Image 1 (cartoon, rainbow, N blue to C red):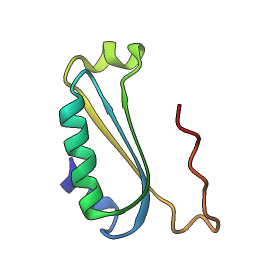
Image 2 (image 1 turned 30 degrees about the vertical axis):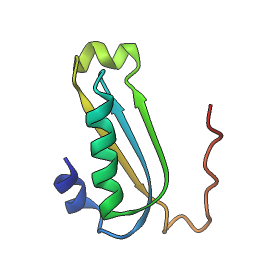
Image 3 (image 1 turned 135 degrees about the vertical axis):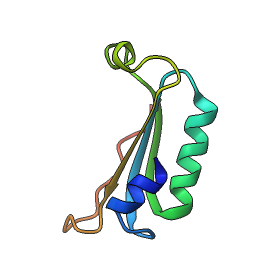
Length: 82
């Protein structure tokens, strides 16, 4: 998954990342750590999949979201943590 993202987004760019998982928090944290080693992560969130998505993907699903923020024209502020 990290290699696929690397084909789309050049390494060392400033990004926001999100990792969604289906009940595998250790694998999700490892995925986030690997992404963090390739990009300049300005904001990171790891969350369990919502129930409607979980029903489609199933247990042990992982999803990575990487959004480059260096071409936005402004510096986004991370949302508050709950």
